[in-house]
Image (cartoon, rainbow, N blue to C red; front, side):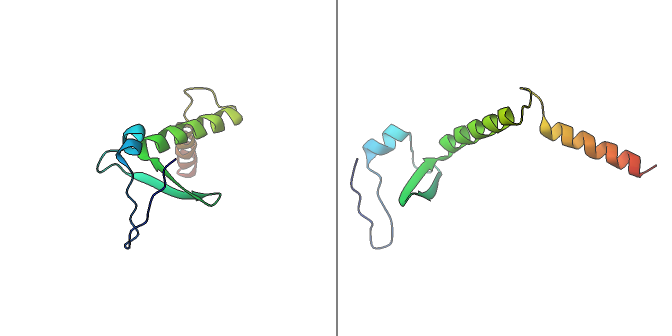
Length: 87
């Protein structure tokens, strides 16, 4: 844990040791959110990992077979609807 200070213009300097530990380089985009009264910063790459895990769990809960494309299924349904409507 490290204590940080907020500057007059609201900026916070993340110490080099923490940046190195998290793989944060100049220009790295981070996601900021408040969780339980804490400010949580997450790198864009870590957010992508979290999203993939979330959707993987969701697909399992929906009992969707691995490799099955829900988007492809939806597109197929829309095409079938359009073909039926244009008759």
